[in-house]
Structure formats: C-alpha cells, structure tokens
Length: 290
Image (cartoon, rainbow, N blue to C red):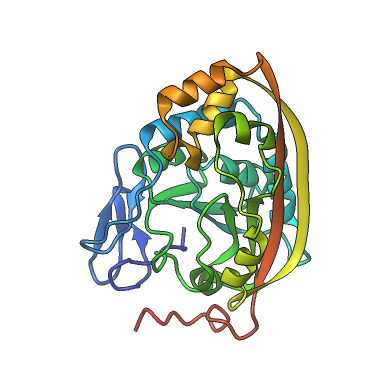
C-alpha cells in the first residue's frame, strides 16, 4: 500500500520484509502491534485523547446490529459517485473501528484504504475490519502520515475535519466525503437523556473550516426512523461524545425510564468536497520531504 509517509521525516513508508511494520528510506521504523495496527506518531507527540475501550465496545455492538446500515449505504453512494472511475485509494479519517470503510471497500473490490484514528482501542478493532485496510494510530489534527496527492477519497464520519491536510493528501479529481449530524439527529433522546444538542450553526462552521482549502460539489440528506430497545439506546449513547459528559448512573436510570422500544430519528447530511484548483495536492510534490 503506497499511501503512508514517515511521521518523522515525511519520506514514503514501505512494508518491512518480515511484515512486522513499516520503514522509510531514512531508517525510521514503526512496528506493527500484535493486534495488527501501526502507530505513526513523531517522537514525543501525544495525540488528542481518543475513544475509550468502553466507547469502542459500544460502537462495535451498535454498528454490528445494523442500526446505521442506511447511513453506511448513503456514504457508499457518495464515495462511489463521480465520473473519474472508481476510487482505488481511500483514507478514513477518524475512522474508529473501520466499520464504514470496510463496507465501502466491499463495494470497491479493487480498492484499498487506511483507517486513521487517535484511539488505540479503535485501531485494534479496525485492524481486523477488512483485509484491504490498514489501521493507523495518528493525530488527525496534525500533519497526517499520508503521502501528498496519494488518495482518491477521504471519508470523515462524525470525526475531525483537517481541511489543509485533506486537500494535501487528495489526488487531482479526488473528493472528501463528510457525514455530519443534522439538527434533528436523535431528537427523541436529547431531552430525556440530556444528550448534547447539535450545533445549529454546524453547516456554517463546516464550510468555514473547509472553505479555504476545498469547495462543496454535492450534498445529500439521509433521514430514517429507527426503533431501538433500551440496550441499543445505551450503546448508541455510549459510543459517542455524550459518553464523556453524562454521569453513568443517571444515564442508566434515564434509559431505564424509556419505553421498551423507542422511535429514534437518524438524520445526517452527506456532503462532498473537492480541493481548490492549485491546492497543495495538485503538483504531487510533498512540501514535507526533500
């Protein structure tokens, strides 16, 4: 997989002969963990705190139950759209357990990808998500350990959006596909469980963050109504940012007070972005290498 760059010097990374990790021409080496993932951080760099083991376990359970299958299909449609042929190299930025990327790769039998996340617990799961996906622990807000102009699609599902770096790593004709919650996402649970509300200014903030580096080329809304039992509600809340802000005992009591089966609105916006002409990824030159 010729996508990754050394986080120390920026040189290309290749697989070591023993398949025990990655190495660059300058000799910087990165071991593959026994679970299969690779950590690509410069010496001394500590990424933002990622999902905990409990959050990752909840995400695995919720997604495996198929509750977000419709969202995943909407993502697949956006990733495979376009007239430049099927994408061959994908980066799932903040990709967690790799669930969504694995589904996209199932639809693209000749493609390969990288799941990049700051959580080592998520990366352990992502390492087994697909034989054509490599799991990497890295900082999504820093310079990405990805070669300039190396990927056809960047996927961001409920995760950080590093506009300058996304524009750098995309090939000419490449696209960024972003999934963000809409204002009515999970609206039936917000009040009863005290969940974080979606920022009504989210679309403007997204445009402001990406605007200097990418421009929108397509947008679609995905709305559906789920019916979840209490256990599914608990895993849904536990897998997301709400888990960091809620007292576990109070949350458990609030979930127990819900009906046995609760209607829940799944509401997201799927937007597609292209790099601005003349951006950093156009020439193929990586300013971080010599």
